[in-house]
Image 1 (tube, helix red, strand yellow):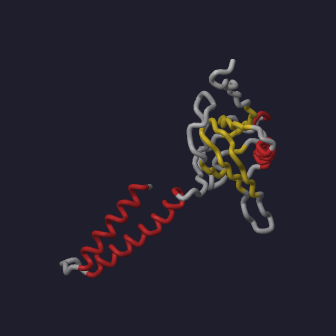
Image 2: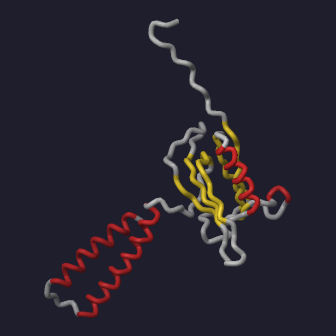
Image 3: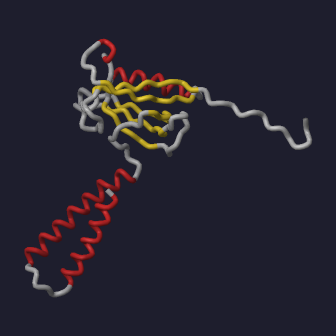
Length: 184
């Protein structure tokens, strides 16, 4: 996305240069160039949203630390689809946070919302919660009942596999006590 924004500004500079000096290009070509550059304004705006901290609709990392969530339930009266917003940090294989917090968005699912609400309550009590994403291609059996079907909503960046997010409390290891120099 960054390269597209950069290309847009280079094209804008070129257009301004050709529009300001007499050339053999017709007025129609110059107007088409102006319309093309105007489309780059919209691409820049949409690209900037991803950079500005808006929730992204990409796949969640397979392992993550749950920092915070917000649940927007669907509104039948307004016809609004619900969404679940996650603020998470990606984890490595040792369950250590390796990224800065990032906002993600998933479509509302009642079973997922209940599990997320429980995890949120534990976070409010001071617990540390990790999330683990599991995908399966099973369709309709009892084990997958209540799981979010990825791809059900245009706001998810997932494939059509079933998506199950499991939340677990983790114990943060305590550091050993430090001794003062000269004390035993």
